[in-house]
Figure 1 (cartoon, rainbow over the protein chains, first blue to last red):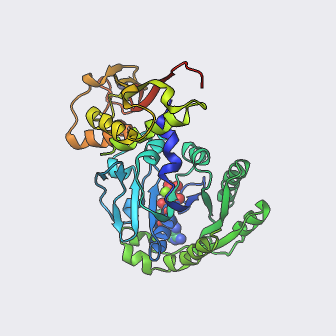
Figure 2 (cartoon, each protein chain N blue to C red):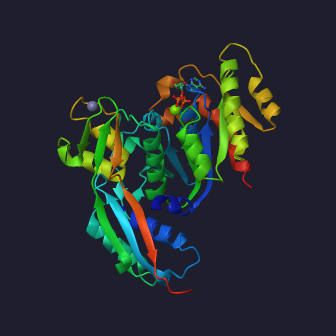
Figure 3 (tube, protein in one colour):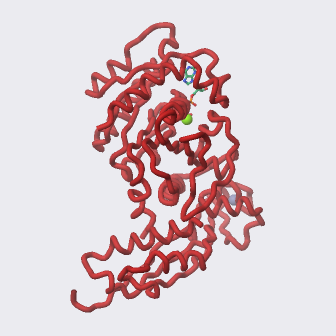
Length: 247
Length: 137
Ligand SMILES: Nc1ncnc2c1ncn2[C@@H]1O[C@H](COP(=O)(O)OP(=O)(O)OP(=O)(O)O)[C@@H](O)[C@H]1O
Ligand SMILES: [Mg+2]
Ligand SMILES: [Zn+2]
């Protein structure tokens, strides 16, 4: 018997809302949207950021932090990387080394992280999901029923199709979808409304879009610049909607 | 010490698996500690004792055994034990203590060097058995 499973809810009991940025499609901006959203939310809320992309951990790079082993105190304490923003992710243990994991290892690592991390009282726990519909998505569906999903799509028919499949899985498992957001809007030179239609087709909310911002990559690692960018400005409308969706 | 979080999980799991019996009827709980995670036995036991204070489950019902860690390479088929693994430094050990899957970051197959291996046993904390007194409820 795996004793860790029995404490997962208890470990998250001090967290008011848990928001996952997911997509199934790779490279659509899950990491940068979740990380900058966590920063924006931390301006007036207590926020935790969980990088659940074990194989492609990136949030520490966006935050410009060199990961180091966390402290222990009755569990593992997520380091407060910024005022009101504590962080947990595999990068704290592996730095920028490759983390080659097969299925059961991934589930084990997720369960371990969730069962030994001692989050302080949080208003929001923001989760950055990896691409795909693998262990991370399936395990979160299994373990955290009250999780709220933001599904990210880009203006691309390929993205739309793959994202549509994630939505199917989420709906099949009665997961709460806060809404679809579009990232990199206008990147193909046109203002498609594919994300809006995708939302309508699935009967879920469209919660806004963020345009493709040239030069965004150059701001990665510099939190002050990121927060002053047009990217953060547009994303803020979405984080305000996340706050307002509070039930 | 994060041993406490694991001890807490073990107690929680026992309490959730009483199947309607009285907590005082728990006669024996066999806890396996995987060698790989390198849990401090004394701190873990102390954690159990502290967390069980004021509860109907006696800490003396807990038996703890260490489970040997065994690996199997997915690349070349080699199997090996933790004791046969080449030395790793203190910080790497600590990372594996926190998160045993970090073995795939800091350890490799002694035969072919691959990090693609399966941990066959001895990962972390598990409950092998819970025994109850047969007295009627
Ligand atoms: N709105 C945007 N404007 C410009 N560049 C962007 C925008 N959103 C994301 N990017 C860039 O796109 C790339 C992918 O972003 P990111 O790593 O956040 O995606 P992801 O969905 O997390 O990827 P993965 O699936 O690998 O986890 C990054 O280089 C990022 O800076
Ligand atoms: Mg990512
Ligand atoms: Zn090998």
